Figure 1 (tube, rainbow, N blue to C red):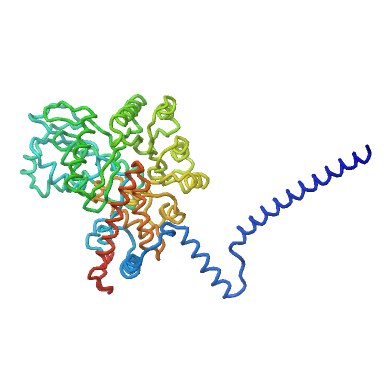
Figure 2 (cartoon, rainbow, N blue to C red):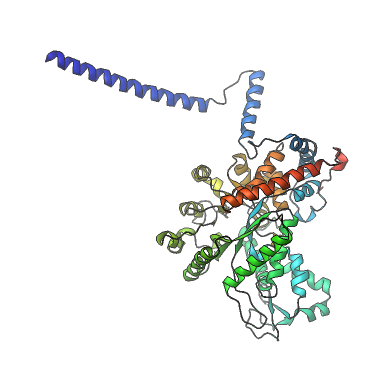
Length: 531
């Protein structure tokens, strides 16, 4: 018995020793891994070591950035080294700021205009057309009246078969656009309209002030676009401007407002969607290379909860009825004015409570106010299982959430020009997109509201992102990945994505070949924008 007891204790001793050794080995491995991480950049004491380690570190850092895993073929390498990189170096030499009104003859901008750009996954209905077109086309339609409010001088429009009797915000009566244009002179009158329907970058402004001007500029565009007379030509122009910029696909945030008829009646919101679909399909027939457009229904966050619930349930109904066109739901509006996402949970959790399939595409983090309830929208957006994050400007201030986004692969929709014009960032080289690009997080470059700053398409935003978010020596690899991301992170079905990527690849290959046809790499062939 004693021997058995001794053997038992011995076995236990051996077992304990094995467990102890095992734990020690685990601890040793963890320490080794930690030290490997810590010492991945070793201390150097001579020039050879410093230069060797430095070069290797920069190589690894570059490989982790956007485009780092892209391999270019021979033709792409020529375009990159002989054309794109020289243009970028020239731009960086002379460029001090983005001047979006003086890019039309810029060589890099022309290059980007020709480049296929996948999809624009964040663009708003009321600001998706260049306002110069809106003024020249929609305000020249017959039976149009306008007024201007006394206080903030906000412009409002209405189409009416007879002199309008509808109440409005103006103390003055409605005025005929046609008659006032004749009286004032078309050039001067149109310039007045253009000034009230757009905004420009003001370095001295702040987001609160700029946003107020921005909202005031949107009202008259909505008055013109969401009408039976103006809607179809307006949306066709939006598709035309996108496709002329070689944007192959759109996902449009839309209020889906009822269309106002000249006789004062309105069409229902589903009819508005049918107009969207019909115009899209007609445009695809006319332009077989255009992949299409789909729609995300939105609510304005400042509206009452019952209105928001009506919008959300409409999104559910229309998604079930038009699954090939309606993608999901979002809430929009200036986040700093609130309410924050956590105060809207009663409405936003309806799909979860009722087991309804309704993907979310939430705006979140479009703020500078670190630590505020608005800033926390990023957190609640992720907790609500958003499909993508609109803007995400504040995301880089939250390292743990940034890691969650990376781990889950949640795409971030970044509109550089919008963030700049709306006063969230003066110097785009300080934009959080620099960090997102350097870590190659899921990111799509978007236009947001291009019409409001008198631009169109995606090239302006690509130009800003390429110059200011990427390294000085980053070239075609970065652009190729950015462009493909517009399809990769879209809400298309997988079979649609495959088809879209094939279309994109055909366009990309042709774009690469066209750049090399008859091209001679000389400094004289590069035109920069000198400021």
